[in-house]
Image (cartoon, rainbow, N blue to C red):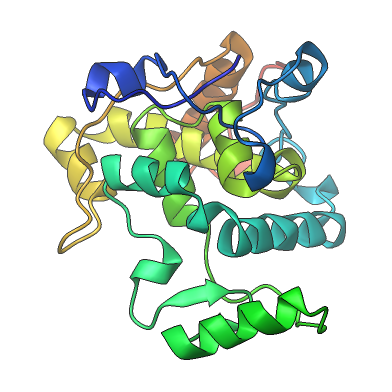
Length: 243
């Protein structure tokens, strides 16, 4: 389950998870440690089934976890050299690289303001813990499309709360990726996942480690969409076989 970054820059090494050096899936100060067997079990993907039980999905319980993932990504992950290298390889800018740059959860800062803020934090001054408006969806989409949405990488990007915080979005984006592949050819899918003008997706890979349950649910949902295209909704909707 352990993942770390090798000195090789080949797609095969990244996509095949043949990494060596520093392990993903730990807090910044612990990135060099190996993930033990207990943590490895905790990092196993768990499907939230948001599509099946949308009416039962507790948004108010989910939202603080999502904010936790935002804070971890902005405050910690994007400043780690391993995450920076990984983002460069899959060609997506981190918040601090955008205009205006976002270095912390308090928003855009100049270099001088950033140094002053770091100094005040070291002195124990309180700071705003609210998450800024950084959407995590583009990063989840890019990880899914490049086959990099493994639990260790999601943990490295989004922290301990990734399963509850971005797990539902990951599940949805994996299904969207399947739908995109079914809707058009390679060029069409690549166009959907390019972020113009500069953040084009460098490569596409098949969905990473899909389960039979996940594919069956995607197939069921795809059938519902085809019925929608034929206006077979409401009282006209076809009967559904229980999964």
